[in-house]
Length: 188
Ligand SMILES: Cc1cc2nc3c(=O)[nH]c(=O)nc-3n(C[C@H](O)[C@H](O)[C@H](O)COP(=O)(O)O)c2cc1C
Image (cartoon, rainbow, N blue to C red; front, side, top):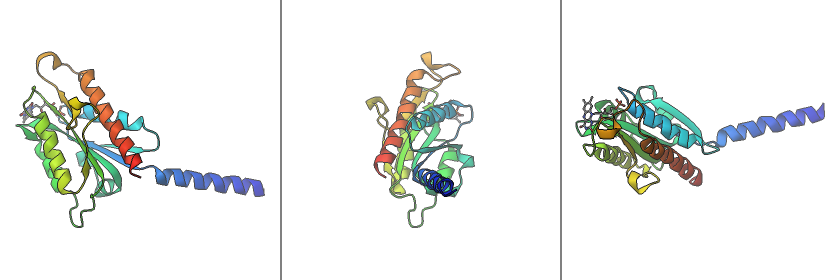
């Protein structure tokens, strides 16, 4: 009986500690026609490949303030709309709590999708990173030099006009998620 209680207590505490210690990574996106969502899912796959982190994948409209506050890493994605992040993404960022800068020192990263080559993806990621810097996040880019500002994908020009995004873009997104997850762990 005593042994049973001991085992149960040990199990209870180990589960508690494990749950408590897994830092959360929030991956969030706006997507009207599914491209940015595909990138977000790839980012989440990459983050999930790292043990000991908890990954939350949510469309921006599903994100609650507590999700932002609890996350140790925030990875935000947007399509390019006329060279800028999509307006709902800007509204989302404008809704982040600012008083006391509660998002300070979290890790931040960005991803984007755009219809054409060199008509906005990079600018959108930099715009997201700039806002993250205002909030005090520690921002980072992707794994590859070709993803220096984050992971981006072309969705509607030349060879990149397919239902599913080209694997080269999805790989960069996965690597971004993995990189952020590893950094979050090393900053614990
Ligand atoms: C209103 C609007 C404006 C857009 N402007 C641009 C643009 O300036 N540059 C670009 O590369 N793609 C532009 N696009 C294309 C989208 O960025 C692209 O299709 C993106 O992958 C859509 O993402 P989603 O499928 O997640 O909604 C625009 C699309 C819309 C609807």
